[in-house]
Image (cartoon, rainbow, N blue to C red; front, side, top):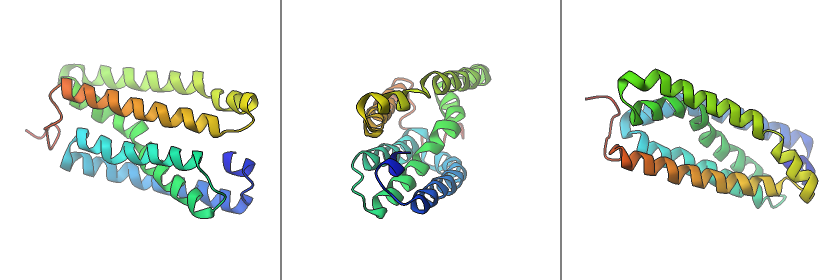
Amino acid sequence: VLYSSLGYDSMIVAFGMSLIGFVLVLGKCVYGVITDRIGGYRANYLFLCPLILGFVLCCISSGKTWTLYAAQTCLGIGMCVCTVGLPVWAGDLTDPETHARTVQRFQTAYSIGALVFSPVPGMAADRFGSYLSSYGVFTVQSAVILVILQLAYRKAGQYRRVSPKSD
């Protein structure tokens, strides 16, 4: 909706949506492999920084097609963490006995957050006249999530671990 409201051609927007879907599917597969090799702490940077960049690119959309495609690619890379990251974080930050319960809690919180906050972008667009404000909020939220997550890894002593659960 953001790009349509900014005047992008509907076929370009449709291709951008397809692009984010393709990159998201690919990213979910690659995320596990990368996390196994470099650990969750480092993988968080590798995937959440593109998510933040994608939201920034949405905020500064210039009317040029490359910004749409770059934003969608970055968002696709980063959004895989939103689902595939939950069990990785649970595995890295809890002990094996509480892993399943922690994954369930993470998924429940994720679902509740998605349900409760899904109307917020539309409400913000109605209030401010554009979806750009919502993408600004998404940018800040993603940065805060990255900081909190990395602090949790540091507190748990998991920031040096290269291959999670491999020892």
